[in-house]
Amino acid sequence: MTYWTEFEKAAPRISTIFTRRHAAAKNLCMLATLRADGSPRISPMEPVFFEGNLVLLGMPGTTKFKDLERDARFCLHTATMDTMVGDGDAKLFGVVRDLRDPALHQRFAEDFFEKSGMDFRGKPFDHFFVADLTGGSSVEVIDGKYLEITIWKPGRPERVVRKEE
View 1 (cartoon, rainbow, N blue to C red):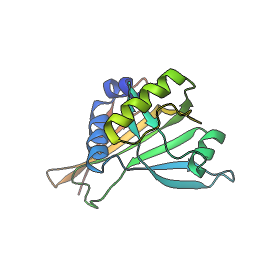
View 2 (view 1 turned 120 degrees about the vertical axis):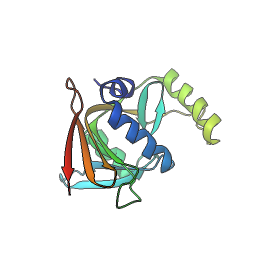
View 3 (view 1 turned 90 degrees about the vertical axis):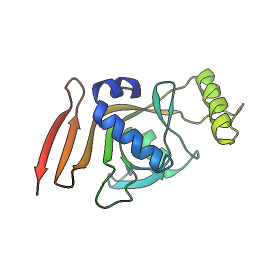
View 4 (view 1 turned 90 degrees about the horizontal axis):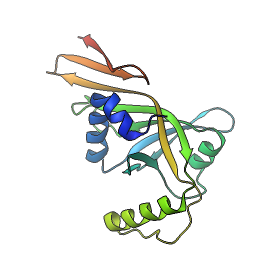
Protein backbone atom coordinates (compact mmCIF):
# COMPACT_ATOMS: atom_id res chain seq x y z
CA MET A 1 0.00 0.00 0.00
CA THR A 2 1.22 3.49 -0.80
CA TYR A 3 -0.32 6.07 1.47
CA TRP A 4 0.38 9.77 1.15
CA THR A 5 3.58 9.95 3.23
CA GLU A 6 5.14 7.11 1.25
CA PHE A 7 3.98 8.72 -1.99
CA GLU A 8 5.66 12.03 -1.05
CA LYS A 9 8.99 10.19 -0.71
CA ALA A 10 8.57 8.02 -3.79
CA ALA A 11 7.19 10.74 -6.08
CA PRO A 12 8.38 14.12 -4.76
CA ARG A 13 7.82 16.04 -7.98
CA ILE A 14 4.24 14.85 -8.49
CA SER A 15 3.33 15.21 -4.81
CA THR A 16 4.69 18.76 -4.75
CA ILE A 17 2.62 19.76 -7.78
CA PHE A 18 -0.46 18.01 -6.39
CA THR A 19 -0.08 19.73 -3.00
CA ARG A 20 0.48 23.14 -4.61
CA ARG A 21 -2.54 22.83 -6.93
CA HIS A 22 -4.70 21.36 -4.15
CA ALA A 23 -3.96 24.38 -1.93
CA ALA A 24 -4.36 26.91 -4.78
CA ALA A 25 -7.83 25.52 -5.58
CA LYS A 26 -8.81 25.61 -1.88
CA ASN A 27 -8.69 21.78 -1.74
CA LEU A 28 -10.98 21.34 -4.75
CA CYS A 29 -10.22 18.32 -6.94
CA MET A 30 -12.18 16.26 -9.42
CA LEU A 31 -12.79 12.63 -8.47
CA ALA A 32 -13.36 10.00 -11.16
CA THR A 33 -15.19 6.84 -10.11
CA LEU A 34 -16.98 4.04 -11.94
CA ARG A 35 -20.78 3.85 -12.03
CA ALA A 36 -22.57 0.52 -11.60
CA ASP A 37 -22.82 0.19 -15.40
CA GLY A 38 -19.05 0.78 -15.77
CA SER A 39 -19.31 4.27 -17.20
CA PRO A 40 -17.22 7.03 -15.61
CA ARG A 41 -18.48 9.60 -13.11
CA ILE A 42 -16.67 12.88 -12.40
CA SER A 43 -17.47 14.61 -9.10
CA PRO A 44 -16.01 17.58 -7.29
CA MET A 45 -14.57 16.89 -3.86
CA GLU A 46 -12.22 18.40 -1.31
CA PRO A 47 -9.78 15.72 -0.12
CA VAL A 48 -7.73 16.50 2.99
CA PHE A 49 -4.42 15.37 4.41
CA PHE A 50 -4.56 13.80 7.87
CA GLU A 51 -2.07 11.68 9.80
CA GLY A 52 -0.08 10.77 6.71
CA ASN A 53 -3.13 9.93 4.63
CA LEU A 54 -5.00 11.56 1.79
CA VAL A 55 -8.59 11.29 3.01
CA LEU A 56 -11.55 11.28 0.60
CA LEU A 57 -14.57 12.31 2.61
CA GLY A 58 -17.85 14.01 1.86
CA MET A 59 -21.56 13.86 2.42
CA PRO A 60 -22.68 10.32 3.25
CA GLY A 61 -24.83 8.49 0.74
CA THR A 62 -23.64 10.40 -2.32
CA THR A 63 -23.34 8.53 -5.59
CA LYS A 64 -19.56 8.99 -5.75
CA PHE A 65 -19.18 7.18 -2.42
CA LYS A 66 -21.62 4.47 -3.48
CA ASP A 67 -19.38 4.03 -6.53
CA LEU A 68 -16.32 3.65 -4.27
CA GLU A 69 -18.12 1.13 -2.05
CA ARG A 70 -18.81 -1.00 -5.12
CA ASP A 71 -15.48 -0.45 -6.90
CA ALA A 72 -12.64 1.13 -4.91
CA ARG A 73 -10.71 2.40 -7.96
CA PHE A 74 -10.45 6.15 -8.52
CA CYS A 75 -8.58 8.95 -10.23
CA LEU A 76 -8.17 12.29 -8.48
CA HIS A 77 -7.31 15.31 -10.60
CA THR A 78 -6.27 18.73 -9.36
CA ALA A 79 -8.71 21.44 -10.37
CA THR A 80 -7.26 23.17 -13.43
CA MET A 81 -8.24 26.76 -13.95
CA ASP A 82 -5.45 27.72 -16.33
CA THR A 83 -5.60 26.08 -19.76
CA MET A 84 -1.84 26.69 -20.11
CA VAL A 85 -1.23 24.79 -16.82
CA GLY A 86 1.30 27.44 -15.80
CA ASP A 87 1.24 26.19 -12.20
CA GLY A 88 1.26 22.52 -13.16
CA ASP A 89 -1.36 19.84 -12.98
CA ALA A 90 -1.47 16.42 -11.31
CA LYS A 91 -3.47 13.19 -11.30
CA LEU A 92 -3.41 10.42 -8.73
CA PHE A 93 -4.62 6.88 -9.36
CA GLY A 94 -5.49 4.32 -6.74
CA VAL A 95 -8.00 2.50 -4.65
CA VAL A 96 -9.66 3.62 -1.45
CA ARG A 97 -9.41 1.80 1.85
CA ASP A 98 -12.27 2.25 4.29
CA LEU A 99 -10.58 2.64 7.67
CA ARG A 100 -13.01 1.55 10.38
CA ASP A 101 -11.28 3.09 13.38
CA PRO A 102 -13.58 5.18 15.62
CA ALA A 103 -10.60 6.71 17.47
CA LEU A 104 -9.09 7.84 14.14
CA HIS A 105 -12.47 9.21 13.05
CA GLN A 106 -12.79 11.29 16.20
CA ARG A 107 -9.20 12.64 15.94
CA PHE A 108 -10.04 13.61 12.39
CA ALA A 109 -13.33 15.25 13.46
CA GLU A 110 -11.49 17.25 16.14
CA ASP A 111 -8.83 18.39 13.68
CA PHE A 112 -11.40 19.20 10.98
CA PHE A 113 -13.45 21.26 13.45
CA GLU A 114 -10.39 23.26 14.49
CA LYS A 115 -9.50 24.00 10.86
CA SER A 116 -12.95 24.52 9.33
CA GLY A 117 -15.50 25.04 12.07
CA MET A 118 -17.58 22.15 10.70
CA ASP A 119 -18.50 19.91 13.61
CA PHE A 120 -18.51 16.13 13.10
CA ARG A 121 -17.25 15.45 16.60
CA GLY A 122 -19.02 12.58 18.34
CA LYS A 123 -20.78 11.49 15.15
CA PRO A 124 -20.09 8.14 13.48
CA PHE A 125 -18.61 8.06 9.99
CA ASP A 126 -20.35 5.84 7.44
CA HIS A 127 -17.05 5.54 5.62
CA PHE A 128 -13.55 6.87 6.11
CA PHE A 129 -11.89 6.45 2.73
CA VAL A 130 -8.14 6.93 2.47
CA ALA A 131 -6.20 6.81 -0.78
CA ASP A 132 -3.91 3.86 -1.49
CA LEU A 133 -2.01 5.21 -4.49
CA THR A 134 -1.17 2.97 -7.44
CA GLY A 135 0.12 5.66 -9.78
CA GLY A 136 0.43 9.35 -10.44
CA SER A 137 1.36 11.84 -13.10
CA SER A 138 1.90 15.55 -13.45
CA VAL A 139 2.51 18.07 -16.18
CA GLU A 140 4.46 21.30 -16.07
CA VAL A 141 5.24 23.88 -18.72
CA ILE A 142 8.94 24.70 -18.45
CA ASP A 143 10.15 28.17 -19.56
CA GLY A 144 7.07 28.41 -21.78
CA LYS A 145 8.91 26.18 -24.26
CA TYR A 146 8.19 22.57 -23.46
CA LEU A 147 6.00 20.28 -21.44
CA GLU A 148 7.40 17.92 -18.83
CA ILE A 149 5.23 14.95 -17.93
CA THR A 150 6.24 13.09 -14.78
CA ILE A 151 4.97 9.54 -14.27
CA TRP A 152 5.17 7.36 -11.15
CA LYS A 153 4.24 3.76 -10.39
CA PRO A 154 4.93 1.93 -7.11
CA GLY A 155 8.37 0.41 -6.86
CA ARG A 156 9.79 2.67 -9.56
CA PRO A 157 11.27 6.15 -9.46
CA GLU A 158 9.51 9.06 -11.12
CA ARG A 159 10.13 9.20 -14.86
CA VAL A 160 10.07 12.48 -16.80
CA VAL A 161 9.07 12.72 -20.45
CA ARG A 162 9.77 16.03 -22.21
CA LYS A 163 7.64 17.18 -25.13
CA GLU A 164 8.87 20.14 -27.13
CA GLU A 165 6.86 22.37 -29.42
